[in-house]
Amino acid sequence: MIDMTEYLQNNPYPGRGIMLGRSADNKCAVIAYFIMGRSENSRNRVFEETDDGIRTKAFDESKMTDPSLIIYHPVRRMDNGLTIVTNGDQTDTIRDNILQGHCYRHALNTRTFEPDGPNYTPRISGVVKPNGSYNLSILKSLDGDPSCACRYFYEYDAPKAGVGHFIHTYERDGSPLPSFEGEPRRVAVTAPDAETLAGDLWLALNDDNKVSLFVRYIDLATGEDETSIINKHWEA
Image (cartoon, rainbow, N blue to C red; front, side, top):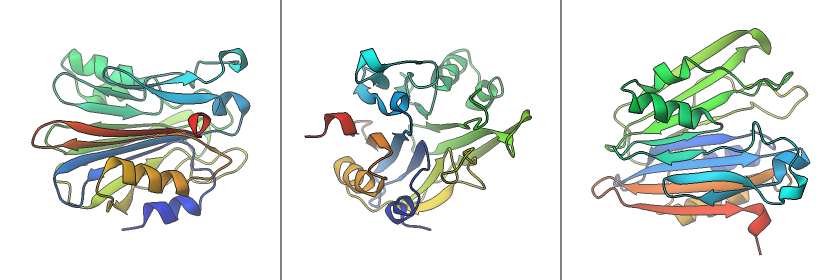
């Protein structure tokens, strides 16, 4: 098990990341999602809270050049208590398939990595269930070869207190950017609440590349949640 803040401090560009886990007191499901950017277009974003989660939006509409891969709903909470978190519009693909009676795997088998060669950014996705169990997945190219899509699914049906699993799009900085490798990293979850975890993660993310961060603690007994959102453009 690794220290997620230390891990992030040593990686200037993990891209976009999802961490799902359980609070140390075993009372809450924990979700963290962040985005980073190297281009002006990617950095010109903020997270905005919606009725069912969050969406990305341009901070300065006049500077938005291509919204296709950067404007989406990263988090949606469904009426059945499921929370979906992803790095793209596959959030809606998963939601729509679940509403049709399918599962998240069925939904993601209809999708692949992003069409942004030569990086072919992986699509990472997570689903948190009302009981706190969760799934993670990554859809990526085979060693940068877009002719082969690789789909990996990880399912955690008995999360442990104080433990989370973290997956991100890029293994490290580079040109082209290398896709995440291996299984989701097993990380310690020690922060007592969403605001504390958000503060710790925000400080750990590379200051030049970080854009926005979302953290949510969901009380497993009541379903009530505590959310913290940090946007670089909205910092004082």
